[in-house]
Amino acid sequence: MKVLQSYIEDRWVDGAGAGATIADAATGAAVARASSVGLDLGAALRHARTVGGPALRAMTFAQRGALLDRMAKVLHAGREELIDISRQGGTTRGDGKFDIDGAAGTLAWYAVLGTRLGDRTYLLDGEPEKILRSARFVGQHLFVPRQGVAVHINAFNFPAWGMAEKAAVALLAGVPVLSKPATATAPLAEAIVRRWVASAELPAGVFSLLVGSAGDLLDHLGPQDLVAFTGSGETARAIRSHPQVLALGVPVNIEADSLNASILGPDVEAGSDTFQMFVSDVARDMTQKTGQKCTAVRRVFVPHARLPEVVDAIVDRLAAVTVGDPEAKSTTMGPASSAAQQRSVVAGVAALEAGGARVVWRGDAPNGGSFVAPVLLQHDGGIDAGPVHDHEVFGPVATLLPWPGDAAEVVASVARGGGGLVASLYSDDPAWAGEVVLGLAPWHGRIHWGSRKVFDQSPGPGTVLPNLTHGGPGKAGGGEELGGERGLRWYWQRCAVQGDRGLLERVLGVPVAKT
Ligand code: NAP
Image (cartoon, rainbow, N blue to C red):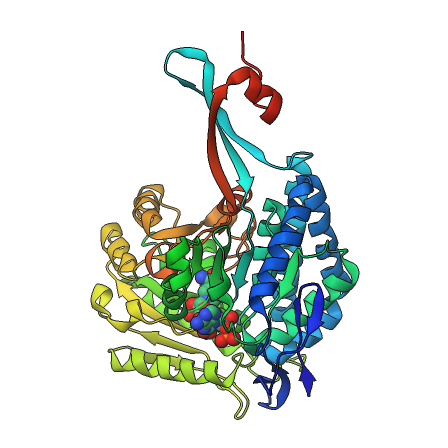
């Protein structure tokens, strides 16, 4: 059985003992082990801080961008092998490509941003601010990289993309990374880091990988370190309240649960382009990556009058999905990523049913492994649909919520989910849609508006893009990642330097005073 290794202090190392067993999601067979027992995680962070940090901060944005470009190219070069490895976690070829190409694409996008930011090592933030009456004594805001380590703790569902998107932003910002993948799908993350170490010319100390449990990692955080976490709300609470995080004020960025909503506008006729866009986005989001996407649609708001056509159209799409062995060409949806995840999906559907939802359609799934069937439910309780608004079933499961068509009412029902990553609406009526967009915006990091003229031009709500913000308030964790240059700011300290403008011009490159 394969024994995964961690890459810390620029060496591949084994944890002690048997560690956690990692299974193939389709067969349940044990395929790998991972342990972090006995690793000196304090030394790992110190090495990244003292070796990787100075190396990265000495590099210009363009040089950091070149590093990201090499990392992206390594993923491209190893793509076929990496897709094969990703099957361990239950991904079909299509889902594996989505993860690996998403990782490479995000690295490449930030590489280009690095080129654009050019030969600087830090950035000015805005113009000099006049203080009191003097034109000479001014204040200038700077963005400088923090001098710690970006500790990235990732969820199981995107072992490639999740790791790469966080790394791209931190490395371009000038902060070294220690990445901890979820154990259930760590084989792909380890395989990627092996390729980066071998072929991406990583400067010493800039990237570390920790496989197995997080152990005492957080006990060793320092005052300049940061933690970016993707995973469940429950683990997020444990990290946020960790004594070292609280004592040192370590910034924590959380991407957690989200009950993403999709809303069909009352103006949309069945069979129209906007209607088809809505149906295909919902069906894709329910089944892509077996519904294990943080951005997947969980609640589907449909005007009463359109319900029969919507049910028919979504069920038609779902019925065309073939659940099975991710290796088989005919398979369009693989198993859940682990037996624990399969149990959680089954329990989640039962909880929705116990809360008043009824199954409208349930697909088939093979026995054995971690397979789960797609399930479409309906709940007629609107804003009072209890667990439908509270409980995220992290699998191929969504619930229809019929509603009367009133904008304020649907906004209130969506907001009942407590804050989400993305909401989507489908409408060609600007008055109705405008009210919904502005009503939903305070509750979401991103809104996807589908309409007739863009029906065939969208990657759908579930695709996270490097240039748009990813994150959401409330239940979604309150975090924010990506968003182009905006994402870099989280890794920087903003500092206002006040002094003689002439000196600031010479030392910091503050713009020359206009005469
Ligand atoms: P999880 O159980 O919370 O685990 C997430 C990560 O945290 C894993 O790497 C896990 O390591 C680690 N971890 C667990 N306990 C920890 C602790 N006490 N200290 C430090 N790290 C700890 O979540 P998951 O099951 O992997 O992911 C599913 C959840 O993630 C879903 O609820 C989904 O909503 C959410 N998610 C959100 C987003 C987003 O962008 N908002 C994206 C994907 C998933 P081990 O695997 O070794 O236990």
